[in-house]
Amino acid sequence: DPTLTTLAISDHVSGTEVVAWWMEAFRDLHRIIRVTGAVRAGTDGALFPTEFFAEESGTLVAFVPVREVPARLPARVAPYDVPASRLAVTTFDGPPLDLDRAYGALGRWVVQQASASEGPVRERYLPTGDEDDLLAHTTEVCWPVAS
Figure 1 (cartoon, rainbow, N blue to C red):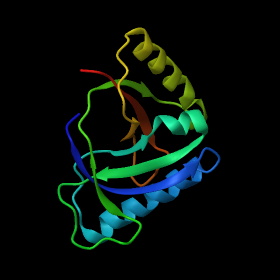
Figure 2: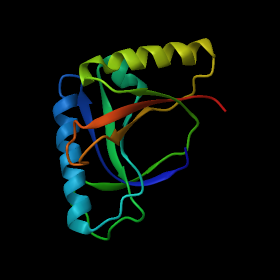
Figure 3: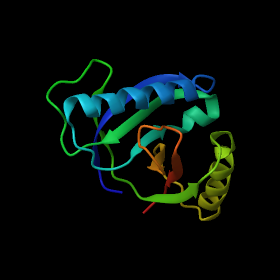
């Protein structure tokens, strides 16, 4: 994937808070897109560092790609460049509680290929309905791999 210019919210989040944080972050980001007139340049996504999975907490980044960053943003929202990276991708279309199955399958494949790379795991949320219905999406789990 190429580098993405995004509007983002990042916070230190524990595993028990992740769903509530995720919902609030994307509600805020969608509102900011509407209010500022920013033009989307891709689908919503989030970055999960490896320590989040190992320690059940870490700094997460929720983002919306935009063509350009608006001049004025609220304090919680910041411009963020999601770095370019080579990714192994699997698609998951099921309840969020079962998302760990997609992670497990993709993680096994990456380890078997001996191609894991440093960097956060990326999720992309492909809308299956109204983009403001945060639960109406298919999730792509994107694992960084060596080039």
